[in-house]
Length: 410
Image (cartoon, rainbow, N blue to C red):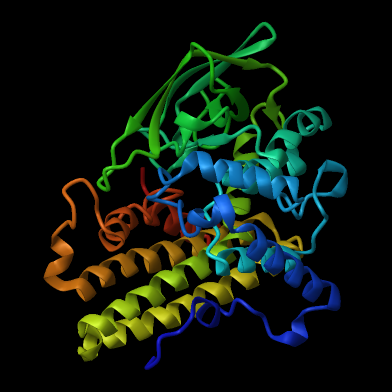
């Protein structure tokens, strides 16, 4: 592509006019004007901060911003009104994420609660659980982390060994989780644990809600290649949670967890793609400034990256539409796995492209204690194809559960 594109034009942030109703257009104007008015003053400096690899940036200030959004009724938009949402349509939720990303608003600190656990409770939780936890998620007064991956299981959720047993009116939890994002800042964790002794694979798992601030939990930060530490090890040593804080029935944790993963790859991915487009647009500007764009091979790779971004958006919108058409669980799992494979490999490729655009300059840190944005992008995106389900796990899901191919020998 000969001209540098804007993130909006590249990702198709503004959908064709004919696809939006008057209510949709009014909602778009409402969100756009609110963001323009409120991303100023004490919040002006937060533009573009945070996100994977940069969660250390202005965390307290971004938490304040999230609570400011909540006070304006701009969190949990798709939730039913009776639980604090606005019952926004799918199109309106997409509009919000488009406008939010286009405004370069800061990365949300409440993503795991709002985008993952909240929808999970709405789908699988008891009324008591909804009344207890949804208000804190909507107001961003309680933060959540996700207790899935383990040292011996990696991204293979069916191989978790963290155990939980009923002890009176409480669950007693023992084991270890790893790569737990923002555990050191979270109030609660949704944990997959094995509650049926002797069970294997996806049988006998339960989905527990566990308070993080208790003597039986130890959190140890993991220092990353970027020098930051947003991932953690979490150790459970007879940690406790109430017996009724299991989502779904005991032993149905696999089904609930798969629901959460489907939500994880939902509407927020549209905003993610606009942020990707901004990164690519900025990188193309660097390539033009340093002459790298004159290299036909690099120019072609940049063009291919723009095409790949269009593919990401098309797949995301198709997946979101089918999710609202009650597709079967096998199809939903396949779509979620394809989505993860597409964006993770695209983004990792962008990090590699950035290093090639920078050339030898990419090997040098501008400061001894600080990487530039492209170096941080390159290093952090090496993990994109691992966390949230590795490439290998996603391909196994597609081949075994969707295509019906023989299971991998284990």
